[in-house]
Amino acid sequence: MSAQDADGGAAAEALAGGPVASDGGVAAGARMAEVAATFGRPDLDVATGVLDWYTAERAALGGGDPSSVAIVDAHTHVGEHDPDTMRCSPDELIAHLVQADAHGVVFPLREPGGYPGPNDAVIAAAAASGGRLTAFGRVDPAVEPAHEARRTLDAGARGLKLHPRGEEFQLDDARLEDTWALAHERRVPVLVHAGRGIPSLGAHAVQVATRYPGVRLILAHAGISDLAWIGRQAQELPNLYFDTSWWAPADLLTLFATVPAGQILFASDAPYGRTPITALEIIRIARQSGIDDERIKMVLGAQMQRLLAGEEPLDGGQPSGATKVDVDVLLDRVATYLTAGFGQLVARIPSTEMFALARLSCAVPADSPQAAHCRVIVDLLDAYERSLALEMAKEVPGVLPGAVHLLALALNVARTPDVPVPTELELE
Ligand SMILES: [Zn+2]
Image (cartoon, rainbow, N blue to C red; front, side, top):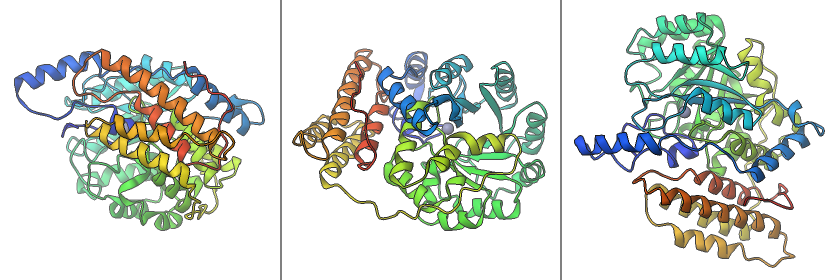
């Protein structure tokens, strides 16, 4: 993954974006431009079978009516200049959100030329989206952050985005004081990249949330760098939130075990993630954690709707505390090999052996309690391999396949043994 990778975080950010490595020089620059022209613009289309599954889960939460369950994706991007080569236009993002019947909070990808222009474009796209999108302004601490924050909020943005990795700063940066004060005064959400590729920022996040109780501080990517300890702090800080744009089931199970559901906000990180697939994963993790339907709906959108409207948040009660999850050793074998294959894929090491072992681990007797989960996992692995073959045929060097979202879902199924799976999954 390139050192310049703008936003390393979600499953696909770790897995589907970016060239192999920045090897520098003109040739690499030319190759990156070539890659950007092709593979950096991912196909966001989600297989009908997965969409049907997502819609069925949503209907189950909504008493039979899927559209009664608001899906608000708290973290999506558009942009055409990110050095990691990811590209997404407002029209592409909107088509994806329409497919998911979801609303999206959108802000710019990394923009080496500065944020005022891209922020204006995002605000204009949101205004023209018929309510599909809500804009956040992306602020660089090095370039009049409070001015840009005020300007974008006055122009229609409903929150702010900070990226400590993309813009190379830490959350205790003195240049941000006026920005925090403004966000506090206006009680707006501020979403901060957290997790992969940066040092721990949890201690600074706790300080900001304590000093500015009006700020709704959202740590992206499940706050994984600080997830070992920050849940207990979050229970005392109702204005500290976490988004769910991350792939690893253990992290998401920890999030629900230690952080109140009212402080967990669904997000996919599209175009790195996929809105309906991540939503499906979060519903399964929440159910495995024993979270009730009302709280799951809070996570999926009801809470973010209130934050965007400037209303008082809903009370999500205590975290599940479910840190002891039963391990089904047969499904644990599947998850072990899928995780190992995942790691190899990211490192660009051939991963076919690990996925072959995952398949063999799924060959349980047809009447065993794991059979339904194993059947779905094999279906997802089949679809992953078909999709991978298509992507590889394009022979674009060094870019991870978008098919990886199907693997993340397969891993999720292996780690949610107590949550039912569809009796039929049509992925052809
Ligand atoms: Zn992101």
